[in-house]
Image 1: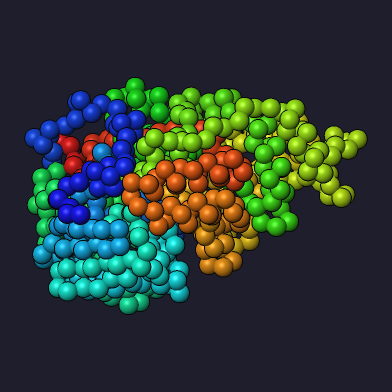
Image 2: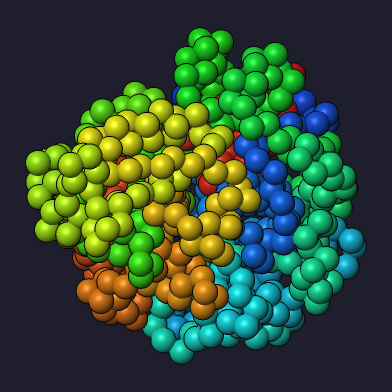
Length: 529
């Protein structure tokens, strides 16, 4: 099927209708005109935690992605409105088993080296090799996919029908030849085709990117000379939201994600924001053998004990949205028409009965135990997210009243990586994944576990979900999403995930405007006079 140069995702995949209206900026009708743009200066954006290892091939943390996406690009760009538009590729044609990308002319890397079709093919083949254990492997690409190049033409082939082949392979961040040859060099440097290249690092403080003067291939014909672009971008580590809000109001920084009480004064100051749907109240469970939540009765019991209205109001700061899908990130594949599940009503009495049935009985001290071992739950949450701690306290009160011993732990980026992918020493909590499609989602719930090199850090083993995921992965485009939604319902029904509430995670703008399909799109930044 032939691709034009700008194709809505809904049309491209035949059955999708992506709706991002709820994520729009707050004052779009008053959006600045081009005459308000002033070129030059430094655009400063806040990140909540230090990004750590900058290798985009293995990046996991959202803060890392927010930083490295300033330097690396993809074949296809996804807009705020859910359109697929050309970026490094000027056009593409696809069937269910093949995509042919045609690159734009004159693309170069930040170091001046040529970026070719072969570079693209090498990137895709590297990500498709399980031995390289990239973030994209198993989620948007695997060994069934291979790529070849002929000049500016890249042909991507899948041995099985893949309804999302173009968008999956077309949105992988691409590394230049030198970085791909030695990925260890990417940990504290960048090697991409981006409009901005990393030029200075102060770990734990700032990451500075400088604009190139030879860039000509951006979306919507953006070049180095486009009016309104800053000369530099600085990602500044600011873990405290109130501090970030103060800096927004004073104009010292241009962008920061603010989810807590400081939003009111930013709105009052007239600052606009853009934003994306955020599964802020998503609860995941460690189902590893020997942990309490390996028992589905315990997962169900402690899920239905939660008062979603009370907890959701706190964690979403009064602006909660009912979860509509476990897919929350652009391009929101297979979200339309769902969900096929409903969350159960709160029922603490039934919760107690389920715990009894699971063998966790109340003792004379009011605590539950089984075979002499107390029921202790390690509940983790994100320290920089201001609403996570008070909402976790509410959950603790509820569970403790049932006889559970609930221990709360506030995580920084290092703790997340260690607990989820190394020690596995956690039980549940406000643990968020935000995939852009059901295939990516399946890598967390159906793929290999971390001890086997995979992303299924919850150790989920759901046969019904696995069977439907396998069926959907090879289905025709007009049938795939319906099957994926059936699969998602199996995760909810088995309490492998409990989405208490979503919200819009707003990124406020001060002295600049930009687009944020998922992370700030550097070619879209425009400085204001």
